[in-house]
Length: 470
Image (cartoon, rainbow, N blue to C red; front, side, top):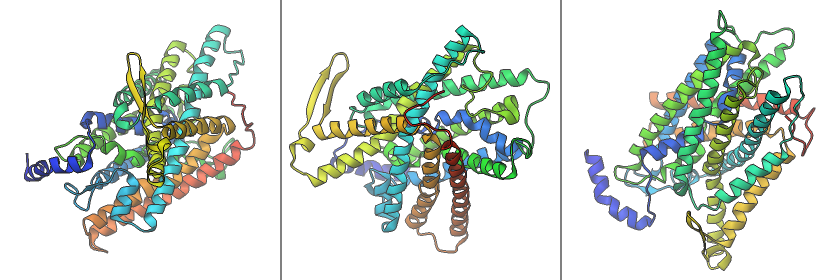
């Protein structure tokens, strides 16, 4: 143990008693939370994104965003405590860190971007899970009736089923109580990514030469110059967003027990999680492009040619659903926490907010809750479920919300907090390099927003509310 660890160990008992919160997380549970939050069903759209960029730029962009996200996440891990990164006061949420380190308008920017992204992700997860459940039913129909059959499937019932399950799981009080669910979800992300990768390898191996080109989808025929530009922008936004998990990083770090210091453990978890994520993203994106070429579908498991073997497609989509069940909880817990904390401060003695009730569930122990928390959590889940049914094109809208939040949450705020905490001199080489990185990512975010708006405008031409068909 080094000097920093020894100093931290001597102070830890006092800090824990002041905090009054028992934590049981470790590097493995934190890494599983990171993988669950980062690797989502969006990984299956990476071949399409690479197809818009081509072999060279596709590989560079995938690797670059993995490196940028890892770097800024390591900076953010040092913001859990402030002003001292080891023995300072705990920041329980991202917004707390921004308030205590930067303050001012940065806090407003953080909260708007963070909670808009979180709420948008909840709707997107609900939709994506419903699509996967629909794909299972559709694959079975094709297997039984033949590919000439239309096999049209409605998704409303599947959206309601997913919402009902999340409503039950939302009764669990915090991220720390659902570590088991996050671990399972992380395993599921490996499973469906591996299935998609294996099917891509099989398809690519059946060709004499890999599909695709150096510059991606060519201009001409079905794709105009303007469309090519929008698709490239959208691909940049999709890849950038697929790495985003900064909005829950502090909450994940708050589940870690210590000593050693939480930032040291979290940095190891980040390196583990992001290494795994980047390797998966590179494999899925490039091998998938080799298999499908410029005709890469938006979703590898629900695209053309993957209706057989139907049982493997079913397993892959089932893994997506299980993974998103856990990811929904990882992203929803901060939303629940901010509302419940606000109510606790506003109504300090109200029984609905502070009186704790318990329900004993056979074989599962007991669940404790307040009436207010029960109502709030139910309202959030029901609202995201209804929105998913009301706006079946919400994936494009979620891409817009995510693009807006990528730069401030993943890049700008972590860099500004790092520069402030470490007192980096303005216009020094370190300051210039970090600000240049922030500027480049800002421009990419703008491009992603433009691409998302173009996608939304196309979806609006043929969408029907409360009528999700696949």
